Length: 286
Image (cartoon, rainbow, N blue to C red; front, side, top):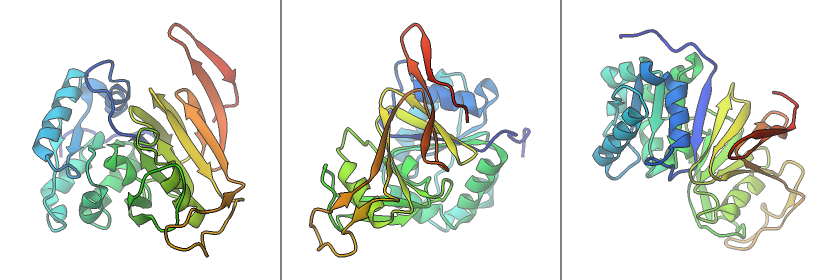
């Protein structure tokens, strides 16, 4: 395998979907920088998409425009193909791995518990940045929302959890958050599993997670963090489809410039973004 291994802090770049690819491309530009810029060895995984060839071409165009060499494409057709040593070797040599949007169930069928899934974990551990958008964001956590109704009101058993990759433990990630009104489904999942922290990410917005603990928000929207550890809920007893009672949940709305501690579940820094200047409003450091 050519090239030196990435040697950095374990980093995830988790994107809420519909990221800008034609303008400033703030979020994808950050991914390229984390992957090594002109020296990056990026692998694109378009497996979640119903149009993987078109998606692979689109990300090849944007990553090369942003200064990276042409990416390699890894797209296992089924779970058996996820055992292919040649595909595993591509991930083992990558400095950046990017998973596209589409259906997270396609990803959960082909990556968790397979040699390719193991290679993703190795890449993360050695410091290659692992990025994902939309479905590629949901698969990052140990448990992911694989389907569910949208809307503001949380309802009993209107959503479903499936196994994810477990690159970020102790959380449930949802994407297209404000744009598709997914507050209710994330609340229903976290109310039923209050030991997990809910993270909802808007479109064209990302969290950059360092060492599986601290994340910083990038992009145009906001990130919603939901903490139900001390909340009361009727989730164990509510009938199917009923609105859930959830009282005492703690919520955080975090725009770009926010840094959050997932271990302590609290904001540790906020740098307000202005067009011409940045003003530090809090100075506690991670």
